[in-house]
Length: 106
Image (cartoon, rainbow, N blue to C red):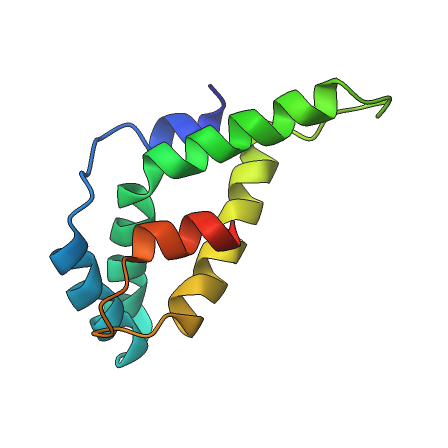
């Protein structure tokens, strides 16, 4: 486990569909520190899917002839960029589940 992963995901925040819907609404309709705090919390709720996808990605790359694999922290940072775009494009209150939306886009 790398530094970013240890510090960012050291505490468990369990996914709650209704809370995430509410938080994404707040993120999409506010700015600054408030939006950033909710965005960080929702990303922490996505820990399981982020770690699973990081592991899968690195395992797939290890089977190739790539000279140097990216660091886990770098891949997690890339996941956050994808997450950020998913939050921006997600339509709240349409009966969707952000967890599955993020996993599909991820």
